[in-house]
View 1 (cartoon, rainbow, N blue to C red):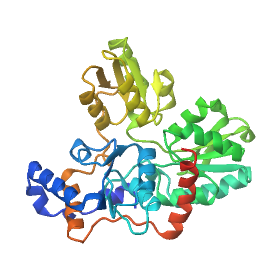
View 2 (cartoon, rainbow, N blue to C red; view 1 turned 45 degrees about the vertical axis):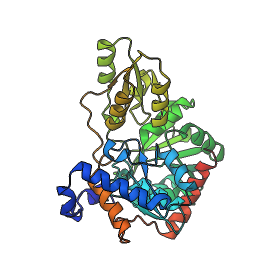
View 3 (cartoon, one colour; view 1 turned 120 degrees about the vertical axis):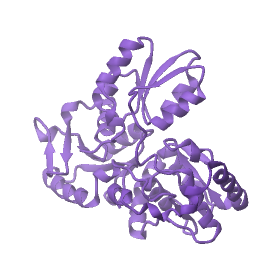
Length: 368
């Protein structure tokens, strides 16, 4: 199911009563159900989620952290994932058959993940094999569908996160001469460049026209980047960096590696969501920071670190439309349906897809 299908789902599926309840009433009910279900219920929450649901999270983290937590959680019968569709798919793949993974709002998707569908990927793979033979190992960012993870696993590759991308790309290049990096070109480009691979040895695969975009000799290509991106991080610009430098000369700029290469290059620091959080946590009181990542997280860091000056690198940035989808009414609805024994919005990945995706995920987790 792609993002447009998720967004077009009938919003009336949320019963009217939840639209009429006050937030204190809903919060009280969530706490009641959490206490009643105890360890049978587990709520992981991604850092980009709203505060109104994160306050109920049993574990908060980035994609790697939540993947690891999901893989070792054996007690919960119900995992109510406050994140997006691909994260819930990963949780279903990693957890036991007795466990049910619930996504409170099925419209919570990821535009980046939708930029690489399985049909485009399989078609590209055939053409790339014709060009380069058996010299390519596929890697996929965890921000991808279960079908893409399965494709990568079946072809000897692995998943990566922004936390471990360097280690996984290094590993991949010991396995094959080249890598195909899906679906975020910016994370792939920034990671490969950091590892010493020059830009002129990187090419871009455009799935819309089935074309490899490069200059020079194709035999020199080491990294093939899928033409995809994060709609949030791509909106941080060089102009944003220059504006901060002009207004706040002493301010350090830290960005996520999903940002464009030219933005990462002129920033002071770049790294995963966890890296950004840890860097701000360890920073000296009185230090000042401009952060280039999702707005919910930036606001949470501003609220938590009153002893530091923190701003968004792009002051006009909005929270991610789909990462920001899950709200308190949908969380309560999903919990009450579990309490009734009639869970809704269960995420189920078929066995063949799950088994192959597990290969890709396990290769990553073994190196995490």
